[in-house]
Every structure is written in structure tokens, then in C-alpha cells.
Image (cartoon, rainbow, N blue to C red; front, side, top):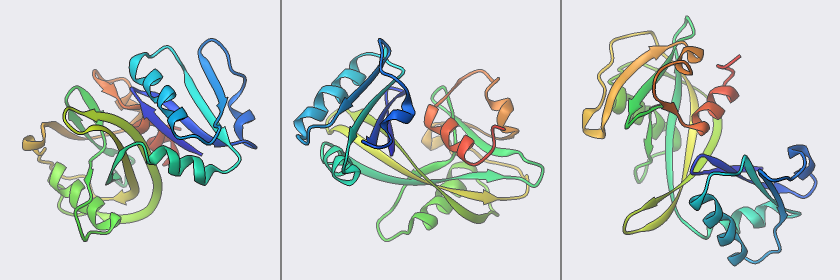
Length: 209
């Protein structure tokens, strides 16, 4: 299964066998088979770009690898990496940028591994000097538009990390206004939005329970 956020609405790519786990389709939910023609995907991408009425959209096919390859083929793809950095007492490192709370992450440079990029980006965006890499947490996916280059699919690889709580320096040249240590549940009560894929990765890391 792949969950791609388009304007904060999930487009879920699923196998035929798994589609029933999402429940029934309805006025606010769409469930449709993928007929194997990539042009078919444009309809649903356009639909989610232009309105936010749906709770989710699920497209399913017996061959999930083919569906994912066809979907990726509609975009310029960018790979990024970041971390869920936790202190011994359970606080997590967050940044605040352009009105949203986020986790530190950034594009993978040529020649870097995803782990190297994740460590570098956390250090650059927050000023954190010491951290230890943990297990991978998987990927999140979201689509956005660039003014001259069109649609972009961003694939972000996430890792658990650990670090002692220490002073932070937000990377202002990247429009980061704050870098803070917070209990994860407290984040949801703070002013400012939280991207849904960030909520997903925090939940996967077991930080919202």
C-alpha cells in the first residue's frame, strides 16, 4: 500500500485483496479499480488538486508494483530524508516553518545514502550536534507543484534517532522560525498546522499513544 497526500487528502494505492480494509465508498470516499492505463490516473490527481471534499480516494489493482510504477511515472520525483529525534524523557525535535509544524528533513544530495542525508539534514535544520541513528521508519509521500516544473512527488525516508536535549539553532535561511523539543501529544494542541504525513510517521513511531 502507498499513501500519497495531495492537498492533505490521501490517495491510497492498494492491492485488490486489501481494498476492503478501507471500508465502503460513499459521498466523501472514492474506491475505484485501476484499469492499467496511466492516463486514468490524471483524473484522480486533478480531482484532489482542485477540491478537498473527500476523506480519501483508493485506487486498487492486483499488481501493486505496476500501479506504483505507473503512478510515479506521472511526476518528477524528489527523494528526501529526515528523522524523528527523541530525548531520553520522550520529547521529540520539531521545527516550525511557513505556518506548519514539521520534522527536520531535506533532499538527498548526490552520492549520499538516505541515512547520511537524514543525519545531515537534522543537523543543518536544527543545529543539533550530537545524535544517534536508529531504525528506519519507512517512507511518506506527498505531491506538490513547482511553478515552472509542474507536479513533483516527494518521497521522504524516515529514521528513528536519539539525542540528549540540547540548545537548538533553527536554520533561518530555510525559513525555519523555531526548533524545539516537545512532547509529541503537546504538538497537536499548539497554534499552527501539522501536516498529515507528519502525524502518520509520529504514529508509526509510537509517539502519539
